[in-house]
Length: 309
Ligand code: GUN
Image 1 (cartoon, helix red, strand yellow):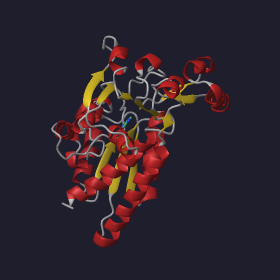
Image 2: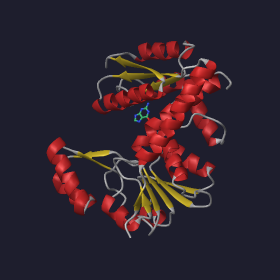
Image 3: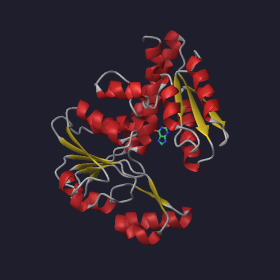
């Protein structure tokens, strides 16, 4: 039987509607309007799209937003000055420095400088530590979105075997911490893991976040497993598409490459997941949509926590 597709859009829309209601209530009852500043350095094309989407979602939900776009040659000290200014600004609730930063800037130094209570990405070591101890914290948006997809789709997490493929600070590590907090038995797999498929094929839940198109294939997936695909890879070579897709989906993707020059492919082989998984999040249309919704969640949570609400 074909896997059931979990729609990220429906879940993201539901979360955004809840947040918009909360923002309205904060404004009318307490005269508070949450505010987010996104800082982008340089001209990375993907970052430009991501930040534009973040800012427009703020507008949609009634959150104040500011996009500070700085030139590539901005120095580390100049960026630190801006972060410190935003830390001090009483009317700014959330600060987001879009990654990657230009190579001459030490990413860790910048992220460490953000006030942990305004750190809506959840990347500051204080928030990472809080998450690791299971305490209240601002949590990285993509893994927080995965938990929302699982919970709101009725997937049971407690007691299940979960395999996280990838160990990045943005997805893999916080994903493992959140699944553990939900009482899953968690294994983190990565590029040096031996016999990866023998581990993932025992998992009830697989979260793939390794940045390699179609890496997770049938032999990695247990029949009926829940497969969450966090990968977003742009593929422009039409001859590769039959590795990942079949039938109507293959036709759709070939047309996309013809029209737009590329198509987005996740870290999971779409056709294998459709044939073997029980439920599956597609790319695009899956986890990606939740990331921004959870950023909005964090911004409102930060605005409330800063005022002890
Ligand atoms: N670059 C890719 N993903 C992210 C993210 O979630 N936050 C930030 N700040 N940069 C990113």
